[in-house]
Image (tube, rainbow, N blue to C red; front, side, top):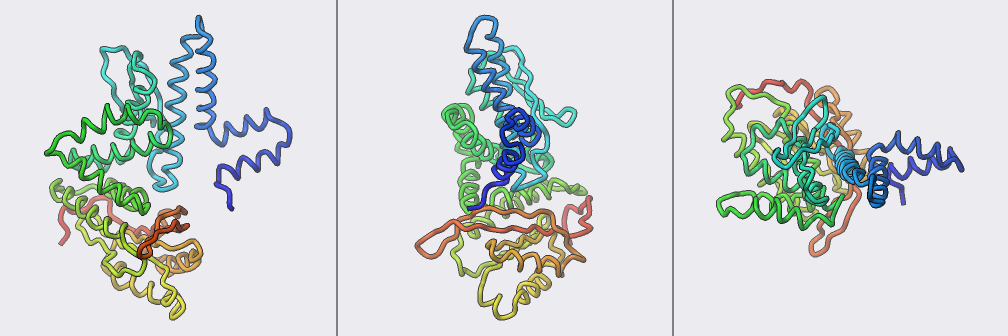
Length: 361
């Protein structure tokens, strides 16, 4: 079984350095500063446990622990959406009369947290503030409050589950339950939809990616109501795709005014045997390229990666690769499911204008 990139680097360092732990530690710090910060947090926790003059080390532990865990999560998130989570995290402690807040300064997300908060409360407040300040901050100017809150809650839940499962109860009490209690709010409904989309691993690579592309545009006389309806349409579009059974024939093109893209699932053996990549090239040409789709998502099993790259080469004059991503996703075959290694190539149309009309004609 192939090793993860991080594991491969570590094994390579061990091989090169042999029995030199000091050099290994130094290079480990250079390659994985976020993981090294977690080690620094652990050291501070041990020192703080000595009491006396070392009690102040507890705040250093909380700071390094939070920074290390969130930065590590952001690094992994960039495997799905590379342009997100670029800002590093900086913690500042404030007194109880000051409000908790997050803001961008000098390329960093600065979190101001209260000194007296318990450890797990500090982590949860910091995690939510970081996500709300760093994730899709450009796109959020177009979204409704419930759309923004639901995205922040869902991604924070992923961060907590990955980095500090022991704090789940605090997250539920402090954020999830209070923010979904209003019967008039759509936050809870959005969270259910995101969970469905994420089951097929399409939440970050497609939904969040499209919102990121949306945030990169500037609209003349934009109408937020239209943008918000389009985001709702995007969710409605992705849900049945996430639940689709292998062999289902359904519409995989999203033709919005602000988001226009197509999903091309490459894997039908009959098509590949009959005409190699011909059917896929013709489909992209007639249904996407000619209609100026901004993005084309080419999705296939890793064993068909060569076909995907060849298809992309056919449109090199009009589309450029935005990113390549390898991940595992759930496939449905009638009454059974299985995890499959998947290759995703995102093609972005060349010459997409920064300033867009608010309504396409």
